[in-house]
Image (cartoon, rainbow, N blue to C red; front, side):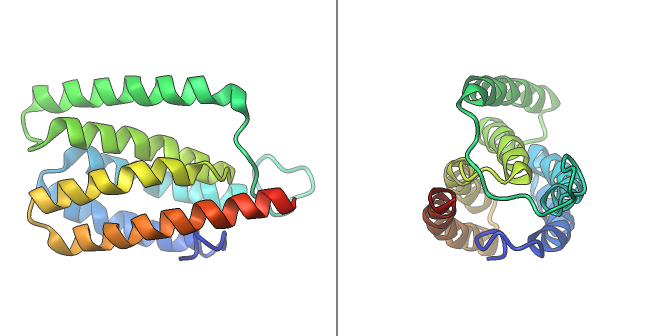
Length: 172
């Protein structure tokens, strides 16, 4: 919920959740997502610094919620597609992932969404809106029903986040 409120306490909580899901994902055979949780851990440190204005802020003030520049859209879509293809191929070659396409796609979208979140772009919620059902499917298929239920709650938070963050940007 701290992400929904754009609360800076989101990042320390994200660090803890990343560690928790590194263990869960690797033990469930969701390897790309486990690797993404390692990425999320690093991005949580970066996001904390970005939101507090330590990085890319001359006056060191808290970064506001903004809209992602339209010129980034083709690069984000292309990056997601390339990452998905690479992760899918890699997971098939390794042969360990039970669901390489779902694992690769959810991981690629998570990479993009986490970067957008660190930038405090409201559109990050759209990425998560797509990621959460993929994660629900992955966790359900691997028998991790508690995590599937948790990600169903996250899906609702995504919808509320889109509304809240867009309203925040519109109010400027």
